[in-house]
Every structure is written in structure tokens, then in C-alpha cells.
Amino acid sequence: MDRSDTLAALRRGELGGARALRLPDGLSEIPREVFALADTLEVLDLGRGSLSDLPAEFGRLHRLRVLFCSGNPFPRLPPVLGDCPTLSQLGFRGCGIREIPEEALPRDLRWLTLTDNRIEHLPAALGERPLLQKLMLAGNRIATLPDRLAGAENLELIRLACNRLETLPSWLADLPRLAWIAYAGNPAESATAPTAAQRVPWAELEIGDLLGEGASGRVHRAVWRGRGDAQAVALKLFKGAMTSDGLPEREMEACLAAGPHPALTGALGRLDGHPEGAQGLLLRLLPPQSRVLAGPPSLASCSRDVYDPDQRFSPDHARQITRAVAEAVAHLHGRGLLHGDVYGHNILWDAETGAAVLSDFGAASALPGGDAGAALARIEVRAVGLLIGELLDRCEAPPARLRALERACTHPDPHRRPSLAEAVAELRHRPA
Image 1 (cartoon, rainbow, N blue to C red):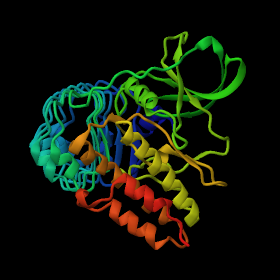
Image 2: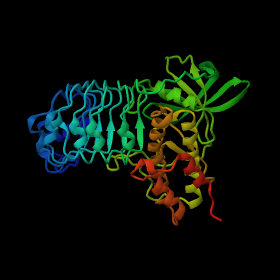
Image 3: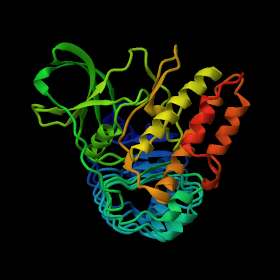
Image 4: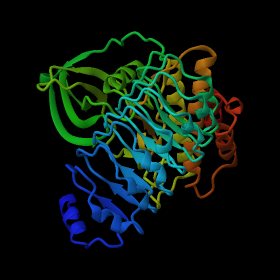
């Protein structure tokens, strides 16, 4: 049903018993009829409009689990959110929010998206939400993180890119479940020199079909005629806006800095002269049978990928995929980069051969040297371990040695995890 039709049906009283409600853009107030659904409503999307606060009786929505308010001009996170007893996911992206009152954080908060706002300070109470699993804070003005966040033992993903952090607190790398982190575009990120790259004129390209689209841009099939013979390539055109991971410019720089590796998509050059000024990268074109390994996290899975329920992997393919990804991540660490997003939905694989390629550098950050870099690298070791487990869960007879490696890589004490080099060595081992 169209969102405008949904609003009309709501006002006619035709949506009794609805569990999800997605209203159209342009609302200036919440329709009173929403509260008639209090006994069933679990997901509410208020669209992009001119809402700047929520009514005092919002807590009447006692079954509400998910609320999306992105694109509405909220000066602060509404305190009334704390009155909703089952609310666990909040999406307030691009709202101009400056203030986060403690009482606005629901008791069962699990997933909080505050990307692209004007937040300078976070309340200490954020670390007192024991279910907190996913925290999206890119594109704000945050200079420090509250120390109590060190107690967020279930936090698995944090996005801190494009803030004002002078340092990353050491306790981040000690969080027992943290597997995905992005912090590019902060003063805390190690300085890196720009990567030299071939400039590819727009006039040398013939643009073909759309291959895929993500938060940061679209990928097209293309033919490049700049080297004499025509070459089939992939062209990623960036949208230029802040994503939940950070800025597209940082993604481009990381992709170029990564250099060539058989298990990475690989940048061939930077686009020049797009007629609308769009930025872009030429990437190697993967075989047509390449498929995305998994779907991105859902509202229910929060920070974990969603696999086809019928998907199965042979033990050999599970080992081959995880070995390729681990080798690619180790290569990135050796070049001073943290990928930040080692997920099945960022892996393309060939079901016939088992070959796999890690893509998407949107969450990549510069990896410092020394102990600080080694500590951050151990976060990514956990991400590799989770991937191993996901594939083994879909094997008929998962090898015991790979199960042992999964447990080692995901150990709650990061200091007891193996290095990526040790994980790669184990993944290269083939049973006799």
C-alpha cells in the first residue's frame, strides 16, 4: 500500500490490529488515530516532515519496538521516548539534534541511529543500557565518549566517523563483543598521505547496466576504452552524502590505498569529468556468477547478517571463503587500514568455485601502529570469527578445527584472540 493510501486508511479506521505503520512524508503532527493501534503497533515510521517533538502521551504505544523519525527537525531526542516500555530501536538521522536527555533513552535500547546531527555530548546513561548492540553516531560533533560506555558488554557495532574525537578511548578495544568499528574523519585517526591514482576521463567510458546500489553509491557495468583495447570494468558513482559509515571521499581514498589483492575488489582509477560533477572509482569487474554472500542485518537481527534459509556451504567452500576474507583483511592491516565492515553482505562469492572477494570500504579507517593498532585489529579478528561461525552453521558437517578457530577468534577477552596471521595460517591448513 502507498504511504499516502496508508494515511487515508488510518484516518478511516481501517487499520485496526496493524503491527507496522509507515506514514508519508510531510507530517506536521502525529495523527491521533495512531494511538488507537496502541495494543498492536510495533513498528512506526513517521516519514520526513516538520515534526519537532512527540506528544506527551506517546508512551501509550506500549508495544512499540521500532521508531523511525529521520529527516524531521528535532532539536533534541524527545524525552517521552523513555516512557515506551518495549522500544528498542530508534532512527533519528539528519534531524539537527543537539541534545540527548538521559530520560530519552529507553530501558531496552538495542539499536540507536543518530547519524548526521549536531550532537556534542552523549549522556553517561548510554552505557547503562545493557541490551545496546548497535550505535550509529557518524557525522556529529562529539569530542569524547562517556566512560560508562565501557560497560556496554553487548555492543557489537559502533560508527564514530566524522566527529571531533581527539583520541579513541582504550576501553573500546576491550569491549567483549565489538566486531565492527569506524572512526575515519576524526582528529584521532592517523594521518595518511593521499594515494596516487590514475585519472579516468568520463569520455573514455561507456556506461552499462546497474549492478548494485548501496548507501554511498551505485555500481554500473562499464567499458573503458582508455588503454587501446576495450576493457570491461565496474564503475562506482558516489552519491556524495554522509552515510551511516562516514563520507564517500574517505571510502574512495581507502579503496585506493588498499592496493591490489585477489580477494579485494581493487580500484583501477579515479573518475574525472563527470558531467554532473559526481565522484567515482573504476573497479575490476567480477565474474557474472558472483553473488552476495548474505543479506544485510534486519530489524530483528540488528547487527547480524541475514542468510537465505536454504543456503548451505560445503566445508571446503566455508574454509575457502573465510580464508580469502581473512587474507584480504590481513593485507589491509598490513597497509595500515581497518576495513570496519567485514560482513557477509560485503562479500561476493562464486558458488561453483568458492572464490570470494571482500568489497565496500565505506567504514574503513586508518589503522595506527604499535599497541593501539594491534588492539583495534583484534576487533576485526572477532568479525572474521563471526563470519566463520555463520558459514559453519550452514555446513552439514562443520570441521572441528574451524569451530575451534571460530571460538578463539570470538573470545570475549580480546587479548586471548589469535592474530589475523595465526587465523590465516589455520585456515590454510587442510585436513589430511
